[in-house]
Amino acid sequence: MNGHLAQVKDIAGGRTLSYALDAHGLVLERNELTGSSASNTQAYYYLNGKGIGDSGFKPSRTDYASVRNRDREIAGRNSVDCPSI
Image (cartoon, rainbow, N blue to C red; front, top):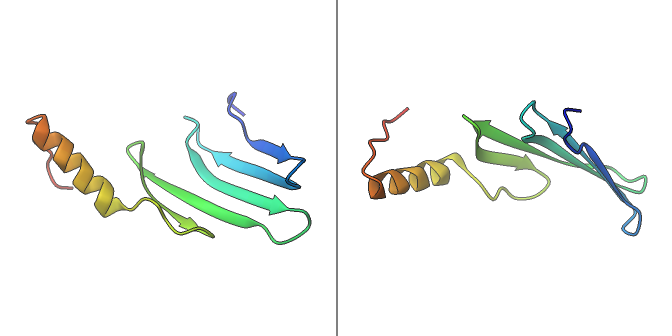
């Protein structure tokens, strides 16, 4: 799969981690299966190659508003105009 890792088996932990990737290797979905129990899935969202959010069984650590504000702060320090979308 384009040379990108798509699955990991944690034998000691008794779980399998599977990843759905795009052509650039960005993780679109992570699925964790522990034993024979139900799986936990996390989806990741990108805009122009930047992570802008995620959703699933764990609380999101990234959201579009935070990413946008961070980019504006960086743009302000570098004196680059960052137009609104």
